[in-house]
Image (cartoon, rainbow, N blue to C red; front, side):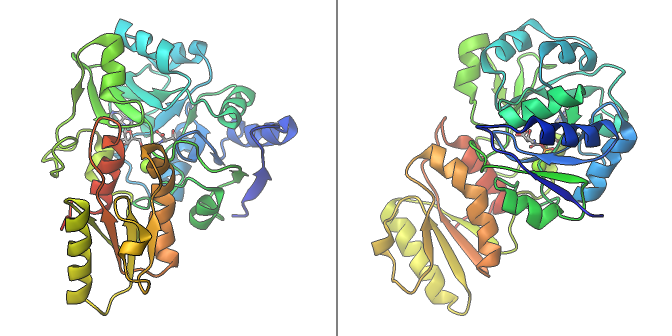
Length: 344
Ligand code: TXA
Ligand code: MG
């Protein structure tokens, strides 16, 4: 199919262009749009046939449910059967923003969205273009990340075009994603609530508002969970073509491990993603990049660096592991998935 592209600037949104994209949603088509976390691949969340096209475009397994994006609280009532008091409190603090709540779904939500579960994930994004698109469509929009299944989520419109040009009706071309990593997913149907996917809004932020919440198994330990917390967590995720290896230890140990590894396997193309050692620590013949100066920058740059490794024809991406704490655990989680839990 021929994909229409619209350029939209969040500082000065062209409403005419938004309306054209909204018409595509209303007519049962697919539109890629920016959000503050990553780009999303959207369709009318109330139309099962429209939603099927999302799965086809991504090559996504049908048993992996989608998040429904809304613009105001009135829409929430049509999607969720009930909104627990704790969920309401969290929504008041963190919405619009990068957090998704799993709630009991209403009958309006087709099985294609919830993958047959009796729950639905709901998020109110803060990105102004996403909000305008939902508002002009006057519909809730189901949207996974706008990548081919298994690839890192797209944080730039170039990445979206690379994966989905010719596979969707429209793409909104816009700025790079501000957060760069997908939303926190929290299951509010459990007591205490359970964080299924860590995100920028962390366990401590949530506990400050509602008290006890749990982190699902496998997130903190760095070991592969035996049972995936949410359906999407069982698939290999966020991976470029290259093998990704995490390198643990002190800065000196990391440097030594990396140089030894390359010595033992000299015939490969390497990309080294630095968080601990300076550029000068490495021989100038090696390709290294900095992931950034702080966790915020790590989050913003990670998926782009993983994707670029394909273009750079790296065989192996060696990532200097950063200290894992409350603030960085969501980034470490994605890296663990990208590496298939392989560390040296
Ligand atoms: O930041 C985000 O959340 C982005 C933007 C576009 O909003 N979306 C996103 O969607 O990351 P996706 O489909 O790539 O990831 C959604 C995750 C999957 O792991 C899925 O299994 C889980 O949320 N999920 C969705 N609905 C669920 C449900 N009812 N119960 C449990 N997990 C659910
Ligand atoms: Mg995804």
